[in-house]
Image (cartoon, rainbow, N blue to C red; front, side, top):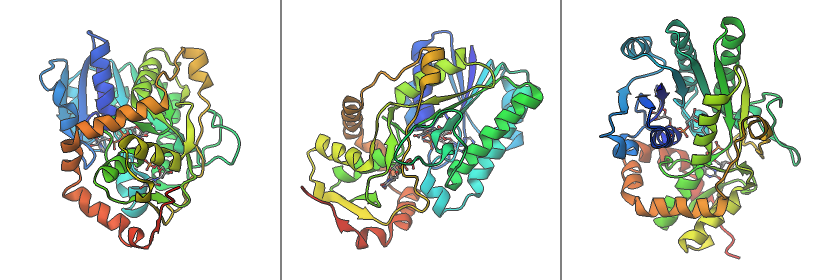
Length: 347
Ligand code: NAD
Ligand code: TYD
């Protein structure tokens, strides 16, 4: 089986490539990635000598790159991770590149899949397309699509284009909508790795608003297993929610990280909230559990400790990232916020 994995130099994509190659001796992966600020070939260093893994640099939204890719390889399936994935960037740096990659790029891939007779197209989507929950309830696959930030809106738009391609062209496509992932190789702009790295350097931990926003955390390997399961056994045209059954406030996550590292809660700073910040995400993943037999197997606390240990052992990996372009972005995003923030409660 030859799989095209797009965005495989990013966080979840690189974990997925490693997962598939370790699990299936008969799987070959072509990893197509533009190497944006979030793509990092160091994430794939241990696979460099594996003949079943071929890396191709290219942009899913550039027709010449995509055409040349499909001319050079015959794929059995395509799994699309490639995306601009950070909400704060979509708010502060403009939505253009999000529209290009997350919407136009997905359409470009689906057209290539159809024209080249590829078996199955899989779109890795997100629970953020559903918007925010109130105090009660969970997102099911039939919850309304109500994105509240540009990132989520582009992912929702792509989901609708996938639906349209299924209905109008008979494309064999499936969609997963997963909750917040954590684990090794996550870019240190996202909550968990950012807090780990800052705490390790005794820098302030910027918690947005009151820190009571709830996310449903899933260890990345559980997400990879769900994608594998849907890729193989999912029903054409179907959407599958994926979640970790562990929805907790951000402040609890941050405190858990500080506990793992033996660092004080005085490092916490409450900073200005993210505009349009979704209050609560919680996933009802009963469809994938019932119909495909998947369930998350990693408990949150041990998986979080394991993740913290990985960032401690791989300090050079994130230190290299936290220089240059990323640094400039970081400064711009948090300028004025940290200075005016309040001390965290040490109790
Ligand atoms: P990431 O930002 O770590 O990685 C994205 C990868 O895509 C990078 O390697 C980047 O170089 C590549 N890329 C970006 N634009 C590209 C383009 N135009 N052409 C080719 N490659 C391009 O993201 P991630 O956290 O690994 O997320 C992967 C996918 O999973 C995304 O589609 C995201 O929406 C989805 N998702 C993420 C989460 C999460 O918690 N991280 C949860 C649910 C769904
Ligand atoms: P993030 O990792 O950006 O994922 P998403 O926005 O896709 O859920 O953020 C997770 C939560 O953590 C979200 O509620 C925003 C919050 N957050 C902070 O409080 N401080 C930060 O510095 C970051 C990056 C996120």
